[in-house]
Amino acid sequence: QGYRGRVRATGVEVAVKVQRPGVREAIAVDMHLIREAARLAKRLFPWINTDLVGVVDEWGLRFVDELNYGMEAANAVNFRRDIARTPLAGAVTAPKPVPELTTQ
Figure 1 (cartoon, rainbow, N blue to C red):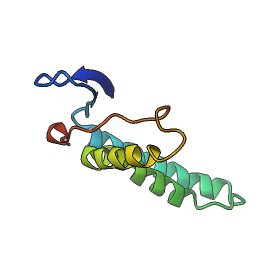
Figure 2: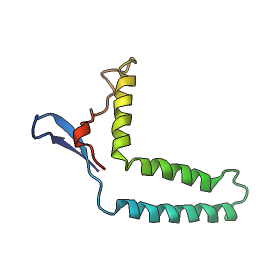
Figure 3: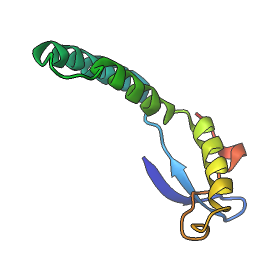
């Protein structure tokens, strides 16, 4: 979940993401169930010409990446740099990461 906050030492406004305890385990169970459902769907609908389990696996990897706040902070830095070079600069942005406050 995301919240708006301020760095106590500087007063700078920041976005705060909170990772709930046990979320990784809950996601692992959910992903297992979704993966099993994809296997079942593939058996029930053999005409579907898509690797459903592969799609679920790829989506799951990207979803789990969202839990890596260090990687997400690095992505935000890259996004801010890249968007600043486009006509969208000023209209589209991302919060500036505060590395010393970024944890898992």
